[in-house]
Amino acid sequence: MGVKALLLDEKDTVATCMDGAGEGDVVTCIGTASRQVLCVQAIPPCHKIALKDMQENEDVYKYGQVIGRTTQVIREGALVWHENLVGFERDYETELL
Amino acid sequence: MNYMGYKRAEGRSGIRNHVLILPTCGCASETARMVASQVQGSINVIINTGCADVQANTDLTQRVLTGFALNPNVFAVVIIGLGCETVGHRELQQKIQSETSKPVCSFGIQEEGGTLKTAAKAAAQARLFVQQASMQQRVPCDLGDILLGLECGGSDATSGVAANPALGLVCDRLIDEGGSSMLSETIEFIGAEHILAKRAIDKTVHNQIIQICKEYEEHLASAGQSCRAGQPTPGNKEGGLSTLEEKSLGCIKKGGSRPIVEVLQEAMRPTKHGAIIMDTPGYDIASITSMVAGGCQLVAFTTGRGTPTGIALAPVIKITANKQTYRNMEDNMDIDVSSIIDGTQSLQQGADTIFDEMLAVANGKITKAEAFGFSDVCIDHVCRFV
Image (cartoon, rainbow over all chains, first blue to last red; front, side, top):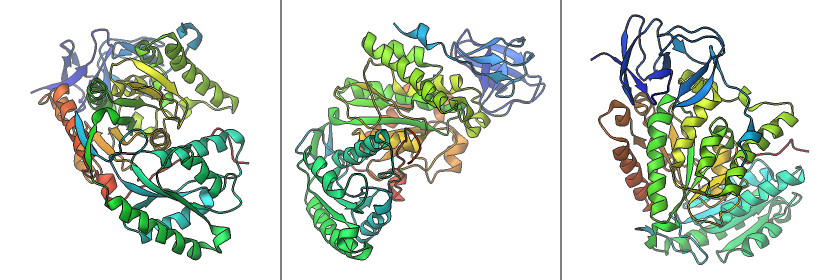
């Protein structure tokens, strides 16, 4: 039984490691799609692992939705959290019908 | 579907039969507590407002006080006033009695000559009400009478993937049975408001959902503040929720999928049946206060990190999908749905567990927060005291 992470939508670029993961672990995503990713940095329980290399200022997807933008380059298999991910202002006017 | 509850002369049935000792303001709160401590079967609330406030704050406080008294879980009300507050005990009594035939009486501390004299008279009255309440039997009531308040707090990554979606299924089932749910915490819509708005029954409700988020941010900006300073909370971040968007996308899942029929101001009572939204802060105790004032007889509260919150007027059922949290805080957690995350239980099975517990609590089962006699109340504020 390997280390598992929850992948909530096919569009997602992060998966949630419910029990955490250690550097060097092969993390198996379960949920809407199955794939594997090599963990390159310790992921605390309930935190997110990057499923791809990300540039600075890149949209990050969870639930198939944008949950924020990266503030730095993030490697595939690294931790994505509040230290390298920020939210952004909403554009409410465009959402009104 | 039926449950066993208390019929009320006006409107919806109650799941509890409380005698409420209700202070008009902060200054009367401790005397009210003394009265409740003398009379088994009565409950009190601590009110932090009620005087030295701008009109908008006064309006909100009065809606909460009146709403508490009118909540179907309340059999009778003993009001304790001071005597020089913005809205005195007689006025509050009149306002409540203009909307209900339930027994209401009131006393003023200055008028009676201090706390002990007031407490003696009020306790005698409360004792009478408690005896009357004890004579009322539970009878079959329509589950459609239930207005379920939805809350999440101390959220972590388990909330949005398991506890909240399971509660969402509970809401859908309750609404299909003719009942209603109330989703609140506007701040925790931000980042997901465009998805929530898709559930609106019409264009007006759609735009109201967007508008309450926009206006909340503008309101804070007018005081030079941003909601993103306090949201996500440090505990949310430690629990793997990095941005307000991520938190909100998980939060709204507890509201289910049925059409949203009405958007209410804080502490207002719904005029429609079905999925209701109330515009409240994300601060759990403030939003629960407003939802119970809006008539919720019951609150379902999902949490990742654990919380003890309870309000004396209405049972708060604590649900977690974090196994460690359930073990760590079993004193406070009512339901463990962590097996959804283990994969040993489906989301639907988790929802059924919550629904069954909700029904048991409606029928009279005491929640853990009720067993401890918890009475958390916080009335939201539009701006500073004056």
